[in-house]
Length: 166
Image (tube, rainbow, N blue to C red):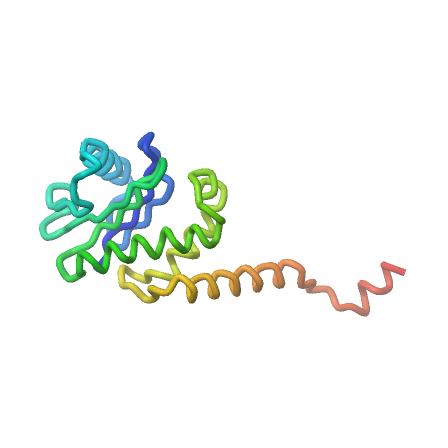
């Protein structure tokens, strides 16, 4: 099971935190700090897989990708395949690139709702539900279309609004 997904800037600022196993909110900052310290101390040539038993409990591992000014981090338990998780990180980043046309940190900061929507289309309750970037984008576009449609839908009947627009 996936326990957490994090996007952390190289300045140690959490840009996305999503926990699928209970972590008390007051502990979130400590977890981010520990993960960031671990990642920032690792050389570029080191493996992208890290055992994080001391941070998240026994049997947990972390896979990450460092791209530009962001760390994309997935924390998971022993029931998940490490390479599948690395591929899932890649799918997440590819989907963000498709969505934002070469994603950067500002895209994530100013479009956090879309970021959560993409993640929710990929993972539900810590279980992977979709791994196709194309399918995820179709779902996100459909959600956006429905949101626009619902925001323009009026609850006042046309017969009444026509009286006031003449």
